[in-house]
Amino acid sequence: MLNLPTFDDVSAAAKRLEGHAHRTPVMRSRTADNALGAELFFKCENLQRMGAFKFRGAFNALSKFDERQRRAGVVAFSSGNHAQAIALSASLLGISATIIMPHDAPAAKVAATKGYGGKVVIYDRYTEDREAIGRKLAEEQGLTLIPPYDHPDVIAGQGTAAKELFEEAGALDALFVCLGGGGLLSGSALSARALAPQCKIYGVEPATGNDGQQSFRSGSIVHIDTPKTIADGAQTQHLGNYTFEIIRRDVDDIVTASDEELVDCMRFFASRMKLVVEPTGCLGFAAARGMKAELQGKRVGIIVSGGNVDIDRFAALLAG
Ligand SMILES: *Cc1c(COP(=O)(O)O)cnc(C)c1O
Image 1: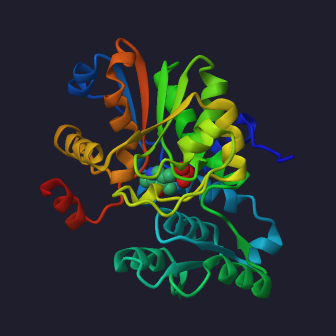
Image 2 (image 1 turned 45 degrees about the vertical axis):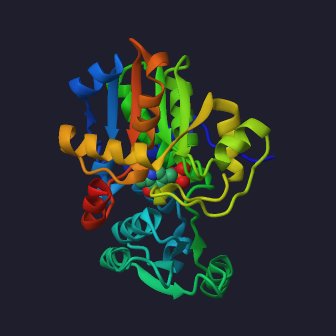
Image 3 (image 1 turned 45 degrees about the horizontal axis):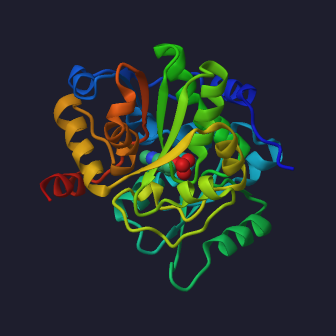
């Protein structure tokens, strides 16, 4: 039996994050409200420290390290936002961080991780197994491995964004959450069930990578090949054991959005709301637009999960 995190763990995480994470704004758009015939509340985690909600889970997990773990350090593997979240949180807490990244990770991401004080270990994506490298480092140097989503402290930390949203917006009828491995969705579900029991909770995946939807419908975790999508933060191959248990218990449905719809949303956020949102961060809004008929007159929360997109890539996607 897994010991699943609860809303009490989310509340404890919120206390640990006070004064360290930004309480990000909840933004409104009359244009979006009119287009959907609903009241929309955008929780802007693209404006979180390091540019995504992942700071919340990483900082919470590292804050709970004991003295031995702090002295030895943390290890993580990621080419994306989790790497930067761990590196920044570790440096704020005076813990050393080792990040295992693929040889073809974008130079900007490697530089950002180093800039936050992380030690970067490069591996060959095609010939080496990053999990084996991580385990070896953990054993040899006593490092603690923090995974990007399937960890109770990470889930509890991610749940603090939705907690803030409900505190500020009040009860909502529906909540849309971007879905990769499910840390953000399961944490958000813990907050929603505690603070707005009637709220419908939807996870949103890229249409080409709907392993979560398949898992939700079949009742067991489905594995897929790395999906082709511009939503690089949701290119996960499967849900986690913790995240799946919470999702199947608390989430109402999992829906999908196409890359084209994501680009449309990026354009809307930039031109109407002056927000730079990465493709993955658009999943929630894209799905809400697709469910316009069901949302008439409803109060709808949308978690905008991150804004880390190379500006040239951003321009190319909008031009394409
Ligand atoms: C990691 C990430 C996600 C997906 O989060 P999970 O907890 O893996 O489901 C969504 N959006 C952004 C911007 C991310 O970095």
